[in-house]
Length: 397
Image 1 (tube, one colour):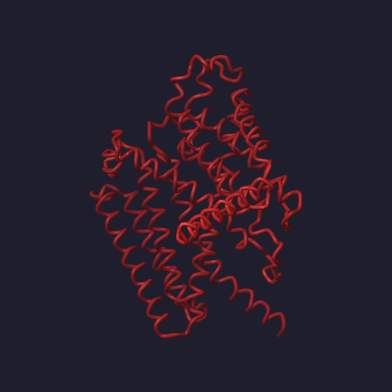
Image 2 (tube, one colour):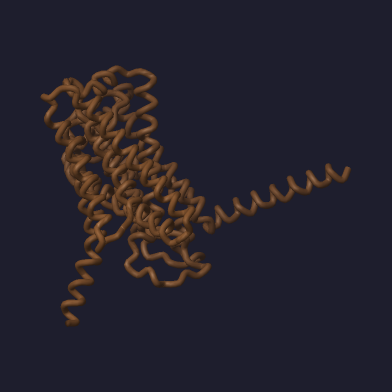
């Protein structure tokens, strides 16, 4: 009997905790759970854009009634993706304007961030409908603007990744114990081994013939950049260690692989693209993983507002918001432009095949330029403190 009473008490306390959590959620005092809801809404928008692109033809008769869909073609394919992306952008940009500057819990902007879900769902559905009533000229203009918005998202994501790598390196080096140093060396060695393995595999897969000059250049230049980052990091004046260039090397090797993988099928140097030209279960799984990875990347970047704070000496109090609400929604707004570019291959006039994402020469060059910018930003973060210190020394002298 005592055990049964104990179980009943535990189940009762669990119900009370759940009701308390639900009450907090409804009253707008659970910002941590709210961010998952926004992430789920973002995922729904991604899937809706993909469905309009690949299966929009099944609802042709219904879409003919919409004023913005002249001849239906203006609401399918790239146009359909851009319309859903515009809706998603308008929603998150509205949330950005209405929550930017929120600093304390229990204030009206905090309640709006974490509650009022019925009103926000109505707002979200309204924004989904509006772009399908707009003329194609406005959608084309948004498509051009989305190129820059997607670039802003990539830059924010890049800074967030570099900040995380730097933070991880500082945490490892803060401990002077011999065991920690051994862990750093093992992690750095693993990173370099994976980098070299990835480069060798890319040579085998994407540069099988000497005529594949462009792919050979991409891969070889990635190897050169890896060596450059390592040399600068190990320079006596920089002394950034070997872990950060190893992790950055993994990042740029991944970007290089993603760039070459984005080359369109039919190229003799990209056998993988030809093999994935058929829609099979592996292609579908790869597409789903790519979409989920994009949503997770947007979500993780959105909650990393602290790496963009210029004043980091401020002490935090218990009633401070747990993350920057405005920054969170701004990242999702630019992420809406980014997922549109992935689904149309960064080309508003390109027709994409089913279950493909980020394919085309435009996508390839965007990735390659992103890789080069990543290395430049990383090197600048290493060299800038030395330059500023030398200037201050010269001015004081």
